[in-house]
Image 1 (spheres, rainbow, N blue to C red):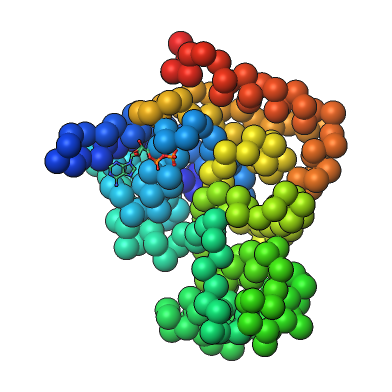
Image 2 (image 1 turned 180 degrees about the vertical axis):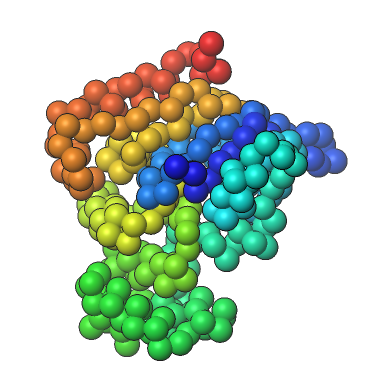
Length: 277
Ligand code: ADP
């Protein structure tokens, strides 16, 4: 099966008057349709840079980032290689949704007006889109808050509204950059559960950057562990729970959870957090 996203030997450095900062080196991995990937690594190793490269905000210095249709076309043309080749940022941005630490809801707009904002900007707020938005608001418990202002909602509800705003644009891939870290622990657990279930139900592919190892183990199908800067891939762990389709909260109580957490902890805290030989 053709993956949705493929990074092939991607490297990136920031250039400034003070010199070069090598952020990523030789990163290669694939993401399949419907997969939930978590990326963990030491602070400052290059995780956000990686998301910026995937979303097309940055262009790799070497290697390629291929996504969706471009990747499909490339696979069918295999043999006539014209690579390295990378999707342009403009093409990618409309197909990729972001969920960030802050929900960025506008206080002067109602929840409904916030949720349809992206559709309005892209001139896509037609009857079909309105019906889809209403259905999501109903399914995810926000319909009766359509006319409320964001300040009237709890932190968890606000993050749900932000997610619906992103999903309203029907992105092919969702990039989640520490989306729960501004929430208190209790709220964080339940929002994490909500978000995972919404993404599963909507059959979305997602990449989550987090520093919270429990969050990564409770949500991901695979976890990519990065080394210190410049980040290389140290290891990729597949999360296999005997019971299928567990919610993040249920995973936390499953017997495998502790073992995966410990493996991750060891990988990230080994004295040599360089590339594994
Ligand atoms: P992480 O998300 O893992 O904390 P980042 O991807 O934000 O790491 O940053 C990786 C490295 O690149 C860090 O050392 C950071 O200081 C550096 N960096 C990030 N953005 C810039 C920039 N615009 N110019 C120069 N260096 C940068």
